[in-house]
Image 1 (tube, rainbow, N blue to C red):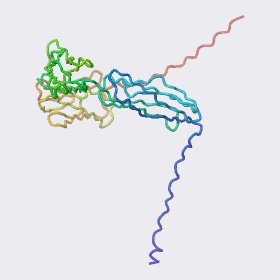
Image 2 (tube, one colour):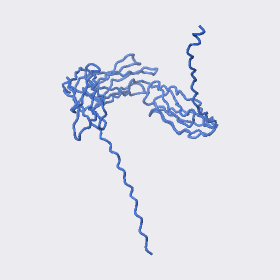
Image 3 (tube, rainbow, N blue to C red):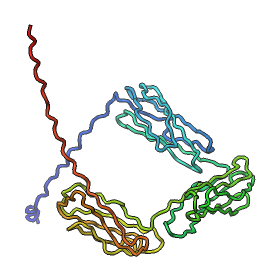
Image 4 (cartoon, helix red, strand yellow):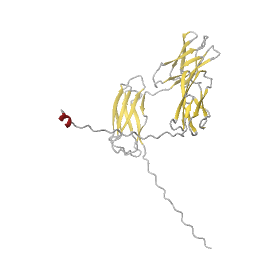
Length: 353
């Protein structure tokens, strides 16, 4: 046994790597300390303009500089903040919020950047609950009809009365003949539904309109809902133009494209081709009848000739789009800048005395 132990291989000793050197904190650096980084406005009305001052103290040894205050969205604005705060002093960063386009609980904020080496940025956040006497959800309804297809798509807007007293609603009125609206009562005086339907293209009717509902409430006498129709083509290529880099192309250069079927009728694609010698295209059905992937392959060192028309074509079973055509464009090569010769001015002739 001892002989076996003596003959056993000795395990190598592994020395752990030395820890990476760290730079010690500068004892004389500025240091930001916020009294709070989150604030709740509570319940606010859409017409209110709530504002809160976030207080920051410099507990460091040199001047603290607040270099930037960047709100997260356009509904939040930063007032004039204290840009330089001396050691031991406090400054304020005012944030204001516009709740006009919101309903219910929200959370917003802004990013603060400073010269504190240990904590260069802070996120100041605030919460609020936007209260409306009569609540609309949503205030905008969008329709995406397919061109040439009849639609009876209906969007539902919920109307909730948050007041103690009951309200009565009048029949809805639509500013555009492209939209019709019907009001249904869910709970008398308290809860309703506005059913908005897109009637399709109507002569001289804009594809967007305002639907209004009069109420018996003096706090909110008129409700307003915006309806928008955005017609979509039956078939669409993504991208609508294929842009390949300047030639000559690298070996095995590939380009992915998609064709999406927006129609309710399923389609079949066939015979994909590119009018470029040596180029190939592979067709894959990602979602049967709806989404297709096209993998384009170009020949090595391909360089388009000046004025050469190039396109991808695919046959389809959609009668409105029997052949999909996607133009192909090769980016122009960037010519190197020609150095401008330096001209040394000739020495002036001596003036005779």
